Image (cartoon, rainbow, N blue to C red; front, side):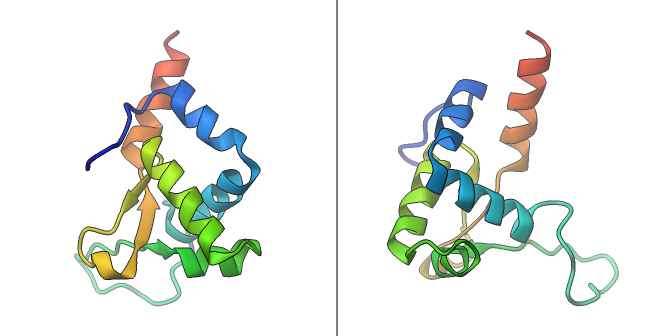
Length: 110
């Protein structure tokens, strides 16, 4: 991914300091995080990856689509969100659980 900065606890916290980015991050966790509710039963032995679009985030947060898009881009830069690689035209993002877990682990080891 081009332009992404190193995911550190400081860069992640700085990204979440912005109220709009925090709102979009909360919507992203609710929509794509590991604890999200499944609205359909997955067939056995399948992996479902959910993405949230800027339009979906705007509906969940009350922000404009443009503001949600900008927030997603900032969250992506901080390493908190990953863009859809399967369908780039949909402009969806998902939670970057690996980077988030690494940053949290790094904070606990300090």
